[in-house]
Amino acid sequence: MAKVAFIGLGVMGYPMAGHLKTKGGHEVTVYNRTAAKAEKWAAEFGGRAAPTPAAAAADADFVFTCVGNDDDLRSVTIGENGVLSGMKAGAILIDNTTASAEVARELHAAASAKGCNFIDAPVSGGQAGAENGVLTVMCGGDEVTFEKVRPVIDAYARMVGLMGPVGAGQLTKMINQICIAGVVQGLAEGIHFGKKAGLDIEKVVEVISKGAAGSWQMENRHKTMNEGKYEFGFAVDWMRKDLDIVLTEARRNGANLPVTALVDQFYGEVQQKLGGNRWDTSSLLARLEK
Figure (spheres, rainbow, N blue to C red):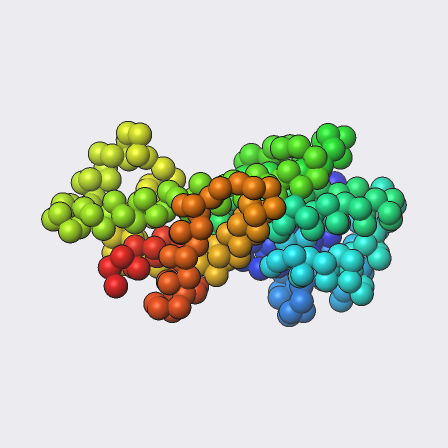
């Protein structure tokens, strides 16, 4: 059992922190910008709520963050009353936010200056993966630190991998989002084509999902796409945030991502023309059927 702090109790962080308490058996203190949510978590899981990130991190061996974006991350780590002002020397900061590789390196430097260690550890698997404790976690950092945090991360993950030095976890998450964007657009076009051709989409998917066209998206999203249901899942707003990180990094490293850039534009249409900001990413089909 370790002393753990968890900062950020959104749709991902809330159950992740819960698994650290229930499955991991750790002593968990949480902080959330909306204090009532932190108190609710503490009552549900038997942990403790703290008034600031620094207070949550005090005396913790492992400090987890899972917030919205780079600026939110800076606020709860290096900002006033951020976790680094409360962390003890030798403690490890693990960031589960999907953020830029640049901010990961920035936090690594800030943590090192405090005598602490850092791992960037973005996750994939969505809300369902977080709730079921089966997330995929892509880590960046040194191997010694990774081996210390891996048994703790295991409480909410089914796959944890060290991808390289600090920043490599975020870069791997960018690849994850690049691949998802293309797959979802292809699935949307396939279903759209099948419906226009008068085919039974359920029968089509039953067959092609067992071949080379099969994917997680096809297995888990074809039914709701076919029914035009999008009020759930990983929001378009979040995907666009992630793709903005991807495209910014691509401009920096010279990668050519024409399909990703195009799909990002399509998601923009879902937001602006259909009002689908909070729809699941599978709502690319709605754009084709509008």
